[in-house]
Image 1 (cartoon, one colour):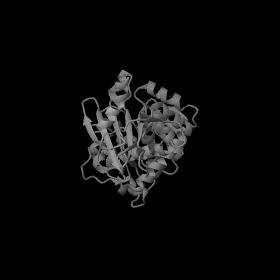
Image 2: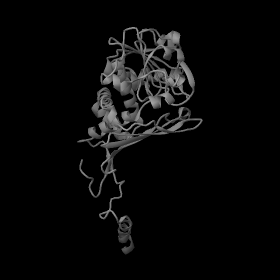
Image 3: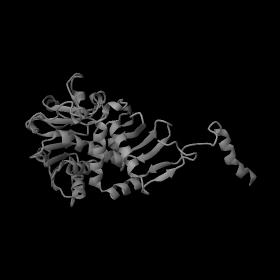
Image 4: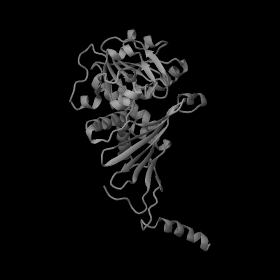
Length: 353
């Protein structure tokens, strides 16, 4: 990696430019690319520094930092989760991220990650389903039709070949919004009035609700054999979506156990309850789905390596485009020991005038 120039500028991807880049590539091709990039990094999982995210919790939400490094590059994401924000017309989740060169410590990318987090979360769900869901899965139930729902549905279509999505939300307007956004995108969209109706005939069930509480979105009697569940919404202490009995009969797959045991569905279980790390399935070290009747569960809480993968992919995809702005955010004087002098020289022309 080359050293930064004396007047190093850092590319910044704004929300506007992220949208332009995604539309330039195509939403579904972007999902496939991100799923491939994340899977590639899962295949080299032992190379990464890993730590549970650093979280600051309040009664109404959480603010988190998610760092990791592969020894060559370092990345982190700032992200919040505030379910009550929607009542004020605000996003539940917002985020930005930084990618940096380990050799110099200089940042090489600053990016919005509100949109990118939605993309990488859906891509990770689809990647997991590719390894864990029944091979003939063509119907998906989407329980919770908020900001993440369309991304999840399109990622499953692009990566796993899903043909039908069955929608349910306690707020009918959310289901109407989701159905309208998915219209004309190559999926049969079925709007449902109950969770039970939504999971009828589904081989993949995705739960993605926002309320910060112990909830029972799915009860054990609703879940038949042979399905794959993506539990996306349970992502902090005190926030779950599935009845404990579902967990007790499912094969459970996670990203990073020390984080998932605190934040995921498995916070309901004993600390030593057996789980399988997804990277071990992808690398062939252990088995994923064992038979056609097994219930598999991807207890997804989101992990820093997925954000790292997404940032690296965006950094690569910016090459040869204009979907970024150069930011002058690194003080880099001609003499690295004379930072004060750089300030004085900047002041001199104003003094002469």
